Image (tube, rainbow, N blue to C red):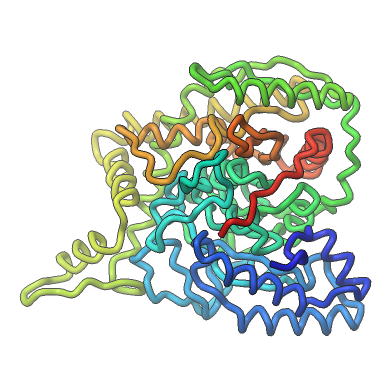
Length: 494
């Protein structure tokens, strides 16, 4: 594979603008890497023709001196984003054959900035999963290996295809979405940076909905600077999305000074979970030391309602999913079941949804329908909403007390083996234990690779920021990244 695919977005931007490299050359290098990496199953709808057309247009803009930051940069797009004329299935069989006639706001903005789309990336079905094993396209494989083992590992989920593609150097960056940790958890599992912006910072229009009050698009990149560059192109107010914030988009990259002297970093005692592996505890301790050595003040804080976050999330998210997924009925678009003589519309709905949805989606739809049903709405859904308000208040009180950023682990473990069996689905849901609070509170959060475990697998730390202050959050992450000095990447075995 070409060394061109090892470039960061910032490095490639410099070479493109200097004329040392063309967008066409960089795109061809990435297309070659995508073709050579079939075992990872990261790309599920390849778009080489579109990529070459966009690269040619980018080269013309570069030649004319009209070169936005992402001009000529090859990206992968998560299959949750609608892309005009290109299959957009959200990893589900029920959307088989669906090619939208419109472009999501985020991808439109990326393409207007000159980015090049290599193709659509694999994901858990409707973004429901933490291991990328619920996709209709099959499992995504993590490019890392544990020690001398040949066992395939999960890249995390739901943005597992995005994580695997960036870590394997198939693209220079990728879009992801985060409903309960689906950018940050896979980023930590593969040793890259994953940023979940403040809810409302990036438009949700044209992104297939899972849980509308929780979903948020964000960048997945090789480092923090690239995340800042990508976020600048992805963010902005969108009149098509009623939850989009009408706020100016700052220069996130300009915020990366690396100076965090005088900043106050909160350490929440509730994140010291019972049974947490010692390696995660040690990594967290090193993270604290790195920030303290950089001039930050560490302060213990309490977020007392954290222990209720997972159950609240797994009531609210399925409830919203049950409502959002009701539209997939075989009538308007996507898969429609074959009917037997005498079947009516009810049978069509039932057969279509039974055939089109996978087991995890069915499980969450049933849970969501149950908690919204008469007699249970107040007992479960309304109670979960009240807990969500308390979780949000915990963070507000912490920030009001002078906390600038909060440091926590990103995941409770390193990447685990694909096909690992769990006696209870709740065990899989525990992968989100450190991340769901950020979505419930609508806050920005970022996962930064900070070390390796005893088997040589990446581990990440999470920073949580004040709402709308992604620049400050990115700067603290930039400082942590430089202190950690994480430069490892997976061996190219595929």
